[in-house]
Image (cartoon, rainbow, N blue to C red):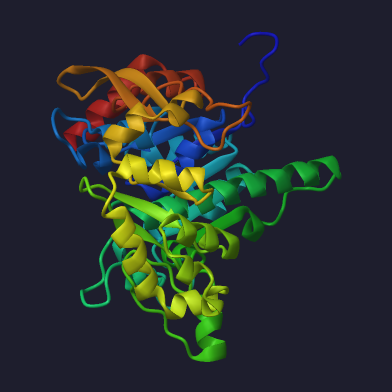
Length: 415
């Protein structure tokens, strides 16, 4: 670090990640991106199951390398007595614990919040589960797909004449991870405020951050609930449109590509209709407000589609941008990796990466969001090999010798 560079915002924060899959590891990734030291605990031998998800070749997926970047990996059997004691020893030197096991699992292993808090009375314990730690559904297992449906999200994705669709990512896990990261930082801020005020640690109940996947999705649903409660409105799937907003959709162009056009602002709509040669629609009194445009959305989409259908996507976008109409192409990974805007902000960062069998050269990975200082912070390391830092962490933090660590691993493998 040069003298002009400041430490990362979360430098000095240490996190123990007991998570699997995507939700808790996403929270860990966010904290690690901004300087926290994140120690990821993985099952001996097999590790996080994400290592085998979307595995196109080798033994370690690039999905794992992405979600678990900037972290340290240690192998530890949490069901063993050594694992229990080691977690307790580690939390004495950590600020946050992240976990996304089924509620009650940590308690059954003897490392529930009461035990961890006794070891570190200021510890923040962030827990992610399908339906939360309390309530009649707390004990139910559930992945993001179930939570997305339970939170009202899945019912709005797709077309009205087909079953609900799923977006192409585990968005329920990712949003829960965002809330878990935010909740962890919020609790750390509260800790520092109490320290400054000369107060003792916050009560354990205030240091347990309880993130439910279904509630995380519900919180993204805007006015879904009040619209129903106040007006008995049940929103429906409407394909590429957004309920109550028009015109805003994807439109097919002459070259077979589709583009997004968001012409739903009052003045923007007038400019859009003028551009496409429909002054009759631009000056129609019924279309001066969004309510009127939504009522005639099919007519408007047909008019816009007729115009885009006569132009290649690039020409249509150029004309729309010149007229001040928000628009854009629909990118795939191919276009993202070649985009000048992403490049200018270092949102694609390149690494040589091992898939466990071979090294893949100059592979692009997404940068760090949000941006600080005009461009992405650098990704320091990709997701680690299984147990890559076991010796470093257990030896450096807990003072165990290599022989002691190896002996425990031999016992765990034998069992």
